Image (tube, rainbow, N blue to C red):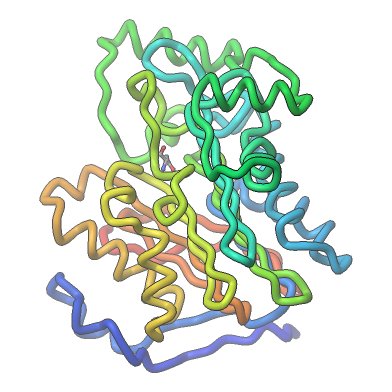
Length: 329
Ligand code: ASP
């Protein structure tokens, strides 16, 4: 027996903007959840991240502490080759990290192109809480982290170095493919995590080493508030994973939250944001985009362009890995 609530709702707004044929059957939105506290996060490593977040949320703690604790798990795990320590490097063999965090009041902190500091999400939180700024980049971000007591370390593991060398040997050709990580190990992409605590405070975080073998200096969507992550505590939050360039150009996570504000379910809002990208990018089939959203009443949903976008959900009565519905395949 489960107390998990499932909601079927009629969408009330925004569906007229849909751009692809075959959308007419999308009048009904499927929403799941509705319990507090709740935590949702991207990909299969989200299960372990949710577990860490749950230790805080389940005992009445703050959602911001929950998302930070959750995001730190894949940052620590060398087997996760797209986040933190063990992340695949850029074209010069350097591991550069992007992260963002937002609280229920709309405060944001971020780091981009951060090197040699494992817990980018915690540096992002310090940017939010201890500086008058929203984002620090590159050397400035590292100097700030060091000044706050973070440890400097080499994040390039032997396995990631070997993968980079293989890539160089194969011609060093960069293609923003559908989960390049997927081809190497069964791990994926950015962790985006959203949590709603017992007091109804909604917070979110993202952290990633970005696209493998990207150009040195490249920053993706993940550290950009509105692109890889957006939280409006009065409405809900969203996170993105996949081709950051496409997400950035549509401010995808902001769009998802705005669409939920207009009345779409989390899944519908995620789907519309995917459609926005599809409608302006003829080459969309070569990309993956995944959105995951959580409303401030605990309802959640996700949608992706390609099949295979998994996300982890933890509520008082539910602890599972789900697969989002997708446009293709
Ligand atoms: N969105 C990330 C980036 O573009 C990568 C990913 O999630 O796959 O850096």
